[in-house]
Length: 156
Image 1 (cartoon, rainbow, N blue to C red):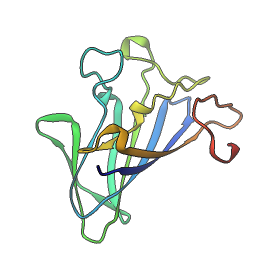
Image 2 (cartoon, rainbow, N blue to C red; image 1 turned 135 degrees about the horizontal axis):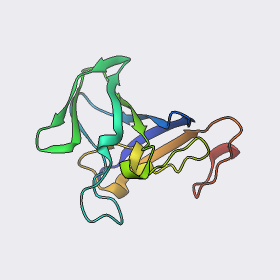
Image 3 (cartoon, one colour; image 1 turned 90 degrees about the vertical axis):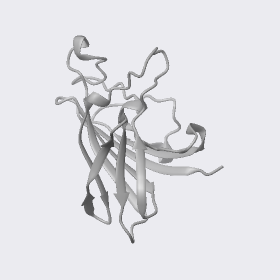
Image 4 (cartoon, one colour; image 1 turned 60 degrees about the horizontal axis):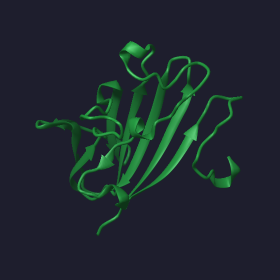
């Protein structure tokens, strides 16, 4: 079975604004490419992935912005055409943390970031989840400390 590779860089330094920025990169070949935002999450009994909390979605290849569209039958799926000569597709967006519990799960405050990877990821359609290898990185505000179950690379 094919394996998909991806890198994801998360910038959580805008804690006061409660905005988490994500940049993802995928190897890609020219032609149609479909990326999906997680909709079925553990502990939920319906498709409740917070796709309504992402903003500023932009796709690019070779430094050029690419047009994209939503799949007309699946609001969690984004379609983009990778141009000839491109071998990497980049996706940039912001996750806008709710400011109050009535708006959804608050994952970012001026004091803490409860980063939920499902909120800041898109994944290529057509691959089994266990066949997608991700290389993650996270930037946090200066002076903050991180706690994670992931093994930090290079001690930071």
